[in-house]
Length: 228
Image 1 (cartoon, rainbow, N blue to C red):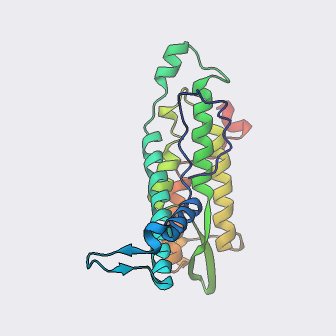
Image 2 (image 1 turned 60 degrees about the vertical axis):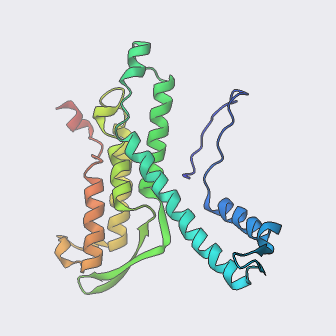
Protein backbone atom coordinates (compact mmCIF):
# COMPACT_ATOMS: atom_id res chain seq x y z
CA UNK A 1 0.00 0.00 0.00
CA UNK A 2 2.93 2.40 0.50
CA UNK A 3 3.74 4.70 -2.43
CA UNK A 4 7.31 3.90 -3.48
CA UNK A 5 9.05 4.87 -6.71
CA UNK A 6 9.97 1.38 -7.84
CA UNK A 7 11.76 0.63 -11.10
CA UNK A 8 10.69 -2.96 -11.53
CA UNK A 9 11.62 -3.39 -15.19
CA UNK A 10 9.77 -5.86 -17.38
CA UNK A 11 8.29 -8.83 -15.55
CA UNK A 12 8.68 -12.29 -17.13
CA UNK A 13 5.64 -13.31 -19.19
CA UNK A 14 4.89 -16.25 -16.93
CA UNK A 15 4.62 -13.96 -13.89
CA UNK A 16 1.60 -11.72 -13.44
CA UNK A 17 2.32 -8.96 -10.90
CA UNK A 18 -0.25 -8.65 -8.12
CA UNK A 19 -2.43 -5.56 -8.03
CA UNK A 20 -1.39 -2.94 -5.52
CA UNK A 21 -3.56 -2.92 -2.40
CA UNK A 22 -5.30 0.45 -2.42
CA UNK A 23 -8.30 1.46 -0.28
CA UNK A 24 -9.71 3.74 -3.00
CA UNK A 25 -9.66 1.02 -5.67
CA UNK A 26 -11.11 -1.56 -3.28
CA UNK A 27 -13.98 0.80 -2.47
CA UNK A 28 -14.61 1.31 -6.20
CA UNK A 29 -14.82 -2.46 -6.68
CA UNK A 30 -17.21 -2.74 -3.73
CA UNK A 31 -19.43 0.01 -5.19
CA UNK A 32 -19.55 -1.79 -8.55
CA UNK A 33 -20.35 -5.06 -6.78
CA UNK A 34 -23.27 -3.49 -4.89
CA UNK A 35 -24.61 -2.11 -8.20
CA UNK A 36 -24.27 -5.44 -10.03
CA UNK A 37 -27.37 -7.52 -10.88
CA UNK A 38 -26.42 -10.07 -8.23
CA UNK A 39 -26.94 -7.48 -5.47
CA UNK A 40 -29.29 -4.88 -6.94
CA UNK A 41 -32.01 -7.52 -6.73
CA UNK A 42 -31.65 -10.85 -4.95
CA UNK A 43 -33.70 -13.62 -3.33
CA UNK A 44 -33.33 -13.88 0.43
CA UNK A 45 -33.70 -16.87 2.74
CA UNK A 46 -37.41 -16.08 2.93
CA UNK A 47 -37.68 -16.77 -0.84
CA UNK A 48 -38.68 -13.13 -1.37
CA UNK A 49 -36.98 -10.67 -3.72
CA UNK A 50 -35.04 -7.93 -1.97
CA UNK A 51 -32.65 -5.10 -2.78
CA UNK A 52 -30.38 -2.98 -0.65
CA UNK A 53 -31.66 0.47 0.25
CA UNK A 54 -29.33 3.43 -0.29
CA UNK A 55 -28.86 3.68 3.49
CA UNK A 56 -27.79 0.02 3.60
CA UNK A 57 -25.36 0.54 0.71
CA UNK A 58 -23.90 3.58 2.45
CA UNK A 59 -23.40 1.56 5.64
CA UNK A 60 -21.71 -1.29 3.75
CA UNK A 61 -19.36 1.16 2.01
CA UNK A 62 -18.57 2.95 5.27
CA UNK A 63 -17.65 -0.30 7.00
CA UNK A 64 -15.84 -1.54 3.91
CA UNK A 65 -13.65 1.59 3.84
CA UNK A 66 -12.77 1.18 7.51
CA UNK A 67 -11.88 -2.48 6.95
CA UNK A 68 -9.73 -1.72 3.88
CA UNK A 69 -7.87 1.06 5.71
CA UNK A 70 -7.10 -1.23 8.66
CA UNK A 71 -6.13 -4.02 6.25
CA UNK A 72 -3.62 -1.69 4.55
CA UNK A 73 -2.05 -0.71 7.87
CA UNK A 74 -1.86 -4.30 9.10
CA UNK A 75 -0.19 -5.39 5.87
CA UNK A 76 2.43 -2.64 6.19
CA UNK A 77 3.04 -3.73 9.79
CA UNK A 78 3.55 -7.37 8.75
CA UNK A 79 5.96 -6.36 5.97
CA UNK A 80 7.99 -4.24 8.40
CA UNK A 81 8.08 -7.12 10.88
CA UNK A 82 9.54 -9.40 8.19
CA UNK A 83 12.10 -6.87 6.91
CA UNK A 84 13.14 -6.13 10.49
CA UNK A 85 14.75 -9.61 10.49
CA UNK A 86 15.63 -9.96 6.80
CA UNK A 87 19.36 -10.67 6.83
CA UNK A 88 21.22 -10.09 3.55
CA UNK A 89 24.28 -12.27 4.24
CA UNK A 90 23.23 -14.80 1.58
CA UNK A 91 23.47 -12.15 -1.15
CA UNK A 92 26.95 -11.06 -0.13
CA UNK A 93 28.06 -14.68 0.20
CA UNK A 94 26.84 -15.36 -3.34
CA UNK A 95 28.64 -12.38 -4.91
CA UNK A 96 31.65 -12.38 -2.57
CA UNK A 97 31.49 -8.61 -2.12
CA UNK A 98 29.28 -5.63 -1.33
CA UNK A 99 28.36 -3.95 -4.64
CA UNK A 100 26.98 -0.51 -5.40
CA UNK A 101 24.20 -1.66 -7.71
CA UNK A 102 23.72 -5.37 -7.15
CA UNK A 103 20.50 -7.06 -6.02
CA UNK A 104 21.38 -6.64 -2.33
CA UNK A 105 22.02 -2.91 -2.72
CA UNK A 106 18.72 -2.47 -4.55
CA UNK A 107 16.89 -4.44 -1.89
CA UNK A 108 18.39 -2.32 0.89
CA UNK A 109 17.42 0.86 -0.97
CA UNK A 110 13.83 -0.39 -1.04
CA UNK A 111 13.99 -1.03 2.71
CA UNK A 112 15.26 2.50 3.33
CA UNK A 113 12.54 3.99 1.10
CA UNK A 114 9.86 2.00 2.93
CA UNK A 115 11.21 2.99 6.35
CA UNK A 116 11.22 6.69 5.42
CA UNK A 117 7.66 6.51 4.11
CA UNK A 118 6.26 4.65 7.13
CA UNK A 119 8.11 6.78 9.69
CA UNK A 120 7.16 10.18 8.24
CA UNK A 121 3.63 9.66 6.87
CA UNK A 122 0.99 11.70 8.71
CA UNK A 123 -2.79 11.54 8.89
CA UNK A 124 -4.48 14.95 9.03
CA UNK A 125 -7.61 13.37 10.51
CA UNK A 126 -5.63 12.11 13.54
CA UNK A 127 -4.81 14.93 15.94
CA UNK A 128 -3.60 15.18 19.52
CA UNK A 129 -4.69 18.10 21.68
CA UNK A 130 -3.15 19.07 24.97
CA UNK A 131 -1.09 21.63 26.80
CA UNK A 132 2.55 22.59 26.63
CA UNK A 133 3.13 24.39 29.91
CA UNK A 134 0.16 26.79 29.83
CA UNK A 135 -0.38 26.88 26.07
CA UNK A 136 -3.01 24.80 24.25
CA UNK A 137 -1.40 22.85 21.40
CA UNK A 138 -2.68 20.52 18.68
CA UNK A 139 -0.36 18.20 16.76
CA UNK A 140 -1.06 16.14 13.65
CA UNK A 141 -0.42 12.48 14.46
CA UNK A 142 1.45 10.00 12.31
CA UNK A 143 -0.45 7.69 9.98
CA UNK A 144 0.89 4.36 11.21
CA UNK A 145 0.64 2.95 14.72
CA UNK A 146 3.57 3.26 17.11
CA UNK A 147 4.47 -0.45 16.93
CA UNK A 148 4.58 -0.32 13.12
CA UNK A 149 6.84 2.72 13.16
CA UNK A 150 9.14 1.12 15.73
CA UNK A 151 9.43 -1.90 13.46
CA UNK A 152 10.20 0.39 10.49
CA UNK A 153 13.00 2.04 12.47
CA UNK A 154 14.43 -1.36 13.45
CA UNK A 155 14.51 -2.33 9.74
CA UNK A 156 17.55 -0.03 9.49
CA UNK A 157 19.52 -1.95 12.13
CA UNK A 158 23.24 -2.31 11.33
CA UNK A 159 23.25 -5.97 12.33
CA UNK A 160 20.95 -7.15 9.53
CA UNK A 161 22.50 -5.22 6.65
CA UNK A 162 25.06 -6.25 4.08
CA UNK A 163 27.64 -4.20 6.04
CA UNK A 164 27.58 -2.30 9.32
CA UNK A 165 27.01 1.22 8.00
CA UNK A 166 24.54 0.40 5.22
CA UNK A 167 21.82 2.73 6.59
CA UNK A 168 23.89 5.28 8.54
CA UNK A 169 23.00 8.24 6.30
CA UNK A 170 19.31 7.29 6.15
CA UNK A 171 19.09 7.03 9.94
CA UNK A 172 20.85 10.36 10.37
CA UNK A 173 18.48 12.09 7.94
CA UNK A 174 15.42 10.58 9.64
CA UNK A 175 16.74 11.54 13.07
CA UNK A 176 16.99 15.19 12.03
CA UNK A 177 13.67 15.21 10.17
CA UNK A 178 11.69 13.63 13.02
CA UNK A 179 13.41 15.66 15.74
CA UNK A 180 12.78 18.93 13.88
CA UNK A 181 9.17 17.90 13.29
CA UNK A 182 8.55 17.11 16.97
CA UNK A 183 10.30 20.27 18.17
CA UNK A 184 8.26 22.42 15.78
CA UNK A 185 4.97 20.70 16.65
CA UNK A 186 5.44 21.38 20.38
CA UNK A 187 7.32 24.67 19.92
CA UNK A 188 10.14 23.24 22.04
CA UNK A 189 12.69 25.77 20.80
CA UNK A 190 11.13 28.51 22.94
CA UNK A 191 12.13 26.73 26.15
CA UNK A 192 15.66 27.12 27.48
CA UNK A 193 15.44 23.79 29.31
CA UNK A 194 12.65 21.60 28.01
CA UNK A 195 11.27 18.82 30.23
CA UNK A 196 8.53 16.45 29.10
CA UNK A 197 6.87 16.95 32.50
CA UNK A 198 5.41 20.25 31.22
CA UNK A 199 3.33 18.34 28.66
CA UNK A 200 -0.20 17.25 29.42
CA UNK A 201 -0.89 13.50 29.31
CA UNK A 202 -1.90 13.11 25.59
CA UNK A 203 1.04 15.15 24.31
CA UNK A 204 3.49 13.58 26.73
CA UNK A 205 2.60 10.09 25.49
CA UNK A 206 2.98 11.29 21.88
CA UNK A 207 6.32 12.97 22.62
CA UNK A 208 7.79 9.95 24.43
CA UNK A 209 6.69 7.66 21.60
CA UNK A 210 8.58 9.83 19.12
CA UNK A 211 11.65 9.86 21.35
CA UNK A 212 11.62 6.04 21.44
CA UNK A 213 11.70 5.98 17.64
CA UNK A 214 14.32 8.73 17.32
CA UNK A 215 16.54 6.79 19.75
CA UNK A 216 16.71 3.96 17.19
CA UNK A 217 17.94 6.41 14.54
CA UNK A 218 21.33 7.80 15.60
CA UNK A 219 22.24 11.28 14.28
CA UNK A 220 25.01 11.70 11.76
CA UNK A 221 28.46 12.13 13.28
CA UNK A 222 30.36 15.31 12.63
CA UNK A 223 33.94 15.28 11.23
CA UNK A 224 35.47 15.55 14.71
CA UNK A 225 33.48 12.58 15.99
CA UNK A 226 34.30 10.44 12.95
CA UNK A 227 38.04 10.81 13.63
CA UNK A 228 37.69 9.40 17.17
